[in-house]
Image 1 (cartoon, rainbow, N blue to C red):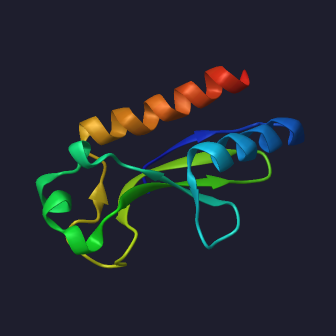
Image 2: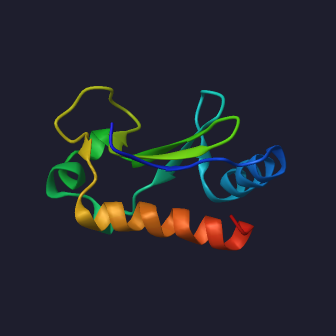
Length: 108
Protein backbone atom coordinates (compact mmCIF):
# COMPACT_ATOMS: atom_id res chain seq x y z
CA UNK A 1 0.00 0.00 0.00
CA UNK A 2 1.29 3.44 -0.86
CA UNK A 3 0.92 5.72 2.12
CA UNK A 4 2.29 8.74 3.95
CA UNK A 5 2.95 8.17 7.62
CA UNK A 6 3.60 10.56 10.48
CA UNK A 7 4.88 8.59 13.44
CA UNK A 8 6.46 8.88 16.89
CA UNK A 9 3.53 10.96 18.16
CA UNK A 10 2.82 11.17 21.85
CA UNK A 11 -0.65 10.60 23.33
CA UNK A 12 -1.43 14.34 23.52
CA UNK A 13 -0.55 14.86 19.84
CA UNK A 14 -2.62 11.83 18.82
CA UNK A 15 -5.60 13.38 20.65
CA UNK A 16 -5.03 16.64 18.78
CA UNK A 17 -4.86 14.76 15.46
CA UNK A 18 -8.18 13.03 16.25
CA UNK A 19 -9.82 16.36 17.10
CA UNK A 20 -8.48 17.90 13.89
CA UNK A 21 -9.75 15.01 11.79
CA UNK A 22 -13.11 15.08 13.61
CA UNK A 23 -13.60 18.64 12.38
CA UNK A 24 -12.08 18.33 8.89
CA UNK A 25 -12.97 14.81 7.70
CA UNK A 26 -15.78 12.27 7.84
CA UNK A 27 -15.62 9.47 10.38
CA UNK A 28 -15.95 6.02 8.91
CA UNK A 29 -17.88 3.20 10.47
CA UNK A 30 -14.57 1.81 11.73
CA UNK A 31 -12.84 3.13 14.81
CA UNK A 32 -9.72 5.19 14.05
CA UNK A 33 -10.51 5.54 10.31
CA UNK A 34 -11.45 8.83 8.67
CA UNK A 35 -12.34 9.78 5.09
CA UNK A 36 -10.78 12.73 3.30
CA UNK A 37 -13.08 13.51 0.41
CA UNK A 38 -11.42 14.17 -2.92
CA UNK A 39 -12.99 17.23 -4.59
CA UNK A 40 -15.02 16.47 -7.71
CA UNK A 41 -12.78 18.64 -9.88
CA UNK A 42 -9.80 16.42 -8.91
CA UNK A 43 -11.41 13.10 -9.79
CA UNK A 44 -9.98 11.08 -12.64
CA UNK A 45 -12.23 10.73 -15.70
CA UNK A 46 -13.15 7.19 -14.58
CA UNK A 47 -13.99 8.32 -11.05
CA UNK A 48 -15.97 11.32 -12.29
CA UNK A 49 -18.06 9.21 -14.66
CA UNK A 50 -18.89 6.67 -11.92
CA UNK A 51 -21.57 8.75 -10.19
CA UNK A 52 -22.88 5.62 -8.46
CA UNK A 53 -19.51 5.16 -6.73
CA UNK A 54 -19.12 8.71 -5.47
CA UNK A 55 -17.95 10.18 -3.19
CA UNK A 56 -14.32 9.17 -3.62
CA UNK A 57 -12.07 9.50 -0.58
CA UNK A 58 -8.64 8.78 0.79
CA UNK A 59 -8.48 6.86 4.04
CA UNK A 60 -6.71 8.19 7.11
CA UNK A 61 -5.91 5.83 9.97
CA UNK A 62 -4.97 7.03 13.44
CA UNK A 63 -2.93 4.61 15.52
CA UNK A 64 -1.51 4.76 19.02
CA UNK A 65 1.54 6.75 17.92
CA UNK A 66 0.99 7.59 14.26
CA UNK A 67 -1.36 8.82 11.57
CA UNK A 68 -1.31 7.22 8.11
CA UNK A 69 -2.66 8.78 4.92
CA UNK A 70 -3.48 6.23 2.23
CA UNK A 71 -2.67 7.10 -1.36
CA UNK A 72 -5.49 4.87 -2.58
CA UNK A 73 -8.62 6.74 -3.67
CA UNK A 74 -11.60 4.64 -2.71
CA UNK A 75 -15.27 4.68 -3.53
CA UNK A 76 -17.53 5.14 -0.52
CA UNK A 77 -20.26 3.08 -2.23
CA UNK A 78 -18.40 0.20 -3.84
CA UNK A 79 -15.66 -2.11 -2.62
CA UNK A 80 -14.57 -3.29 -6.04
CA UNK A 81 -14.67 -1.10 -9.13
CA UNK A 82 -12.28 0.14 -11.80
CA UNK A 83 -12.61 3.68 -10.40
CA UNK A 84 -10.75 2.68 -7.22
CA UNK A 85 -7.11 3.45 -7.90
CA UNK A 86 -3.97 4.97 -6.53
CA UNK A 87 -4.09 8.75 -6.33
CA UNK A 88 -3.25 10.75 -9.42
CA UNK A 89 -0.49 13.35 -9.08
CA UNK A 90 -3.09 16.05 -8.38
CA UNK A 91 -4.92 13.90 -5.82
CA UNK A 92 -1.65 12.93 -4.14
CA UNK A 93 -0.74 16.63 -3.87
CA UNK A 94 -4.16 17.35 -2.32
CA UNK A 95 -3.71 14.60 0.30
CA UNK A 96 -0.16 15.69 1.13
CA UNK A 97 -1.19 19.36 1.35
CA UNK A 98 -3.93 18.36 3.81
CA UNK A 99 -1.38 16.40 5.88
CA UNK A 100 1.11 19.29 5.78
CA UNK A 101 -1.56 21.81 6.82
CA UNK A 102 -2.59 19.55 9.72
CA UNK A 103 1.06 19.20 10.81
CA UNK A 104 1.60 22.93 10.64
CA UNK A 105 -1.58 23.79 12.55
CA UNK A 106 -0.90 21.18 15.25
CA UNK A 107 2.84 21.80 15.49
CA UNK A 108 3.79 18.24 14.53
